[in-house]
Length: 114
Image (cartoon, rainbow, N blue to C red; front, side, top):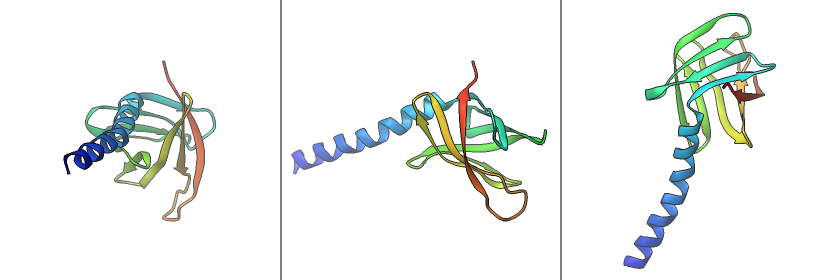
């Protein structure tokens, strides 16, 4: 039994570490070239701010990084961005373009702002 417990602990650590590292690396400012979400900033304690292509912005959105990747949620619009993951140094995610209650997710690519 102790061997099985050790193996299980090692496997859980391997799964948890990449998500934690990705979450830490995601903090900061990100910008898209051609997306409804033009930019967002991921801050401490899961707080984010988002700027849209129509000039509107939200300051108190929430972000999480789970098994599915980065998600940003707004009290006003619901899910804004989902399934965010890295492709090299680019953050690729599904962004909701809908301005109604319908859902219209499209793929967007974000680069870290330096």
